[in-house]
Image: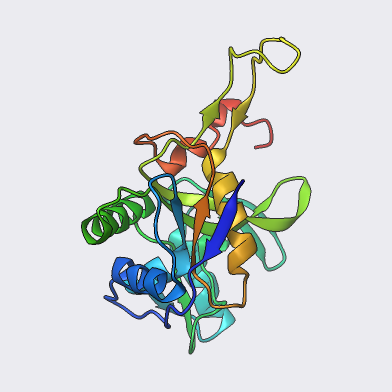
Length: 231
């Protein structure tokens, strides 16, 4: 059985906040005791806020300038929508620059190094609890060819990004030759079901998922250019 346990009560996060400490307090207040097989999912918004990744976005011009500054390349442009490649390598709308759930006339940028951010949270959580819990930092991305958005992993620490089933038999005994499951994206999307977009719940525990320890990076999920049929 898979469970998703929202970590409630985390206050508005500002620069230099200790995200791991806020999560430990939230776990205690929510009565959640960690288990070794748990995975912690944290929305990038509170990580970026704690890292001071704010930028002025008082008007549309400032916002567009922020997007241009965070984009390595412009992939597509249609009206106000810009599909970009970020400096990390992610393909997403508006280079991840986000004005939602941000007080005042500011926008939040993606963390400079989301994998490093996830690792620091994981190490602090281990120090506080004695358990080495994998950490996934999530953001909301659109998807080519499908409407709607879903959460994906943009930073990971402590687990493999992909469950590779190639070479294994399926239920009928046929050998799978192309099946790679984006397990960290599935974990991020599952956590979002409990966190919501306007409920001020920026973290959740995903329990009961079969994951593998590892040292992967979130950018391992980005399809390399020679495999990309759409650019």
